[in-house]
Amino acid sequence: QVQLVESGGGLVQPGGSLRLSCAASGFTFTSYGMRWYRQAPGKERELVAHISSGGGIIRYADSVKGRFTISRDNPKNTVYLQMNSLKPEDTAVYYCNAPFLPGDYWGQGTQVTVSS
Image (cartoon, rainbow, N blue to C red):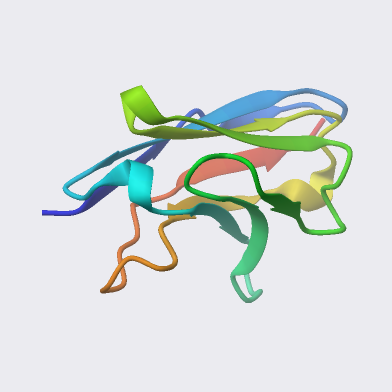
């Protein structure tokens, strides 16, 4: 079955960095684009970044451009989100998703808290 397992979150001070990972299984990872989303308390889930199946097309939300980098390692079935210059407003639960995979699959998410 399809599984998406996010990891790498934690508590970090403003200006710090974190690297999130999402390990995917149960589908042909190399055939699908992948996305990172986040959801802050009391807010809608928002799209953070997208990467195409081969990695050649990448898009970011305006709020994270220049600070976050999405990448993928197809042999490892893993997508990453490198987050630098973190701000308190980046605090949220972060999820990965395969948007064009039939069905609606989400992992448990990983909590990122940016606070001094």
